[in-house]
Length: 89
Ligand SMILES: [Zn+2]
Image (cartoon, rainbow, N blue to C red; front, top):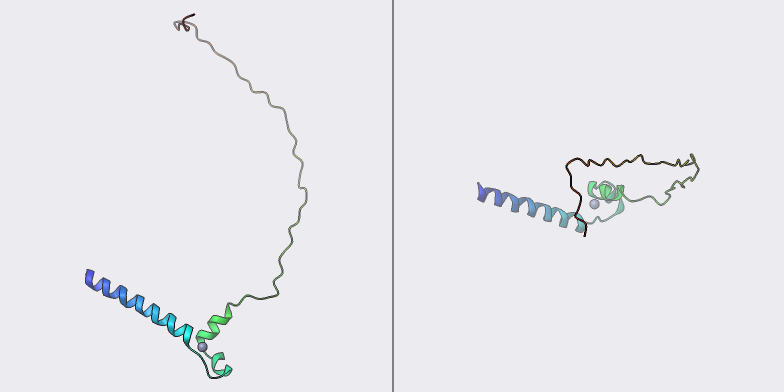
């Protein structure tokens, strides 16, 4: 199982390598042949367009922040039954 998996891995890697070499090194005698080549069509179909319009950001106020003063309601609850305070020095 392990040997088969290893050979299958090497086979897939070599196929990928040879495919990459074949795609990058192939050429055509004229432009009409390259128009019908599926590799060339796929390679040139994702070429970025030069007339790209980017949207400008719009900055507008959508509301105002109203701060409200908040007072925390904290209270100390001292339980002084049975708890001795720290010794006085
Ligand atoms: Zn081609």
